[in-house]
Image (cartoon, rainbow, N blue to C red):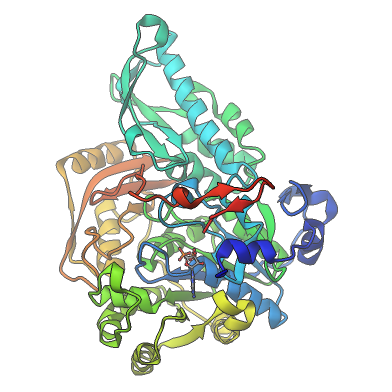
Length: 554
Ligand code: ADP
């Protein structure tokens, strides 16, 4: 039988989670076990840390729909660093059932570079995402109950911006009508669903620094507007305490292990195309308290996850990455070189050469932040020597460091060269700069992202977005960072414009204030905050045996 991620994960021998906690220096009283191999960490009971560990951020080129192996490289790199006797931890996002059941697959790495127990982590894990869904929908219920019970706040039902949420791709729920059936069933109004990873509560949980901060952020979330067009916040409804209570355990980071027994924290899971794309700040900071080096990942290409890591997450946490790894694959380079998805397995070194422009742009982007990136060339068995040679000759000409990485097949051993380059880069002094200040105008911030990160020409705001911007300014909400919602396939807002498009304009069609998260979501192109399932969802291959074991989970 051919190896699959699931078969490799099931054959791997896991250590009891107490042993992993011991390795990480987590005292027994700070460990709340969820079975034998998962635990939550009570960060209040951790010993104080003298120094915080360094941060290695793993990002990628613009990906194919299958993903280019960021999670795989993140895990493999951490295992390689452990083999080099570094004190290291992994910090990753929690998988969402949307991609698990849909097209992309899970988010626990692959091959011999995985976090375990992969089937638990990919399905319900410790219930965090369900808790976020519950808190999100409890808030929706409180809003509708408020309307039904006399609407003391004078909320305009047509201007409620808070949507319901579900952690699955379900296009039929994008627009719904609720409250039908007469006065006893509430107030009829138009509503909609977002996927849970796009809920502001997910972002709040991922950026909060303490339970108190979580509650404060929840209280600031805007749920809609009154008939006088004044904003209504969670604190006006008085339910931030109830929401924080629903989230109290979800807020604690989860501890698991890699196949090679490296401690890993998996916590929070916003997508990088429709949300801010990084695991929770508390997970990264907890890992930094426990280890000298933390390897963490930001979703999709460097134009999305890494840009938001630099401008949102690390700004809130007041740190910056000490090294950045850009994952590239031959197949994605061929796609950017004009090859259709069904022919990516066929050798074509000229297409690789043409596609290098996409990787070059992402390398250039990381350099603009004052960090010299290391490219991890994630090797697939189908890669040919001629294709790999194209990448190495480009790297030599451009002075870019590249490590051929084979962690999928070999675990940490396949990432030793990458680990050595990362360690060198980590030690090098750097002048880190963010590309925009929060106090820049919204238009300036958008233009900076489009020109410097996407390589485009300009921005354009639709009439609706301009109106929203005027409102934002009126309420004094414009001095917040931007969270772009953009396709992951292209540097532009057109999924089919591959490679390194130039001269394009990005159209912002909606600007949504997320005051709890502390950013402004700008929707571009036809990106949706509730995705749909593909014609052949991954779910069709899934099953469970009579012994309770998962089947067909990638
Ligand atoms: P990303 O984090 O960039 O989305 P993942 O690490 O989740 O990507 O990998 C996506 C899928 O590709 C996983 O199923 C993984 O097993 C597979 N994969 C990654 N790297 C390799 C490789 N070098 N060879 C074969 N399959 C791989």
